[in-house]
Length: 355
Image (cartoon, rainbow, N blue to C red):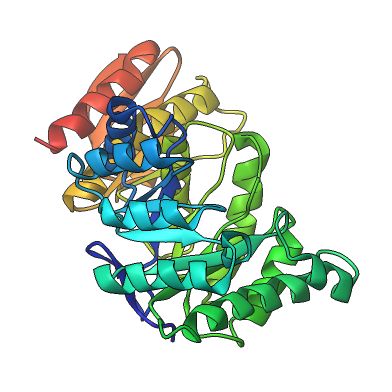
């Protein structure tokens, strides 16, 4: 079992539930925009938010934002060790560094000493685009062995400086390489592991790569905290991360949508209705999960005759017919509405459940 550390009040490792992270993409120096996006991420269910710190102005803005938000913040630092120290002094709950680009041992030690003083963890690691040149030469390129060795070496480097409150990450955009590297890393360190697929791309491709890559690791028992990396609004990363955790059974679904696969008897646009219902239920599900409310099961069925019976265990549901459909609650029909009102009525019922 990995060592447990705390990022603010969120436990990472040591058997704690896998936490969801994301990263802001606004200019960190714009405090108002930063606070607004951090709050949006927290509302979506993000438990830890990371912010880039490119200069001292950003470090100071980070400190102002820290006082205005309720979620733990991680400062992402590259190259300048003074920025890491400034971010810690401005309230960072964790810092992310690559010791390989911070500079001399004395500079890394200064960062470690400041982290120890404030009792916060350090996330160390690399991705396939920043692997050390000596390891690339040793293994003839970027490989799973090279990534695992790099991650483990960085952990030992900080441990040799007398600090063990660490999280390690080794990410690749290659799903198979990423998996193989983590399978090796788990035997090289007991530090908590941050998992993800780096540079996975737009949602169309990135969600698929992340679902397979992160899901496989979680099912193998690897991963203490995670980020889905998408070229998109970071709120989408959070919502999809939760879906991964729900799918592998590590989070209970706040709202479980079930729908039939359609057949020749279907007389409504079931595919359109099911997708619309799922999209509109996602923010409601995030709010329910955050509030700790009981899970709901929602059914979207294509047969007005058998739908309610086939989904008797659902809390709410709709079942279509010819241009109209039934709205039901726990298998009991409560009303009939026009097809174009079915999803609206379903959402109204689910939202009322939260009152």
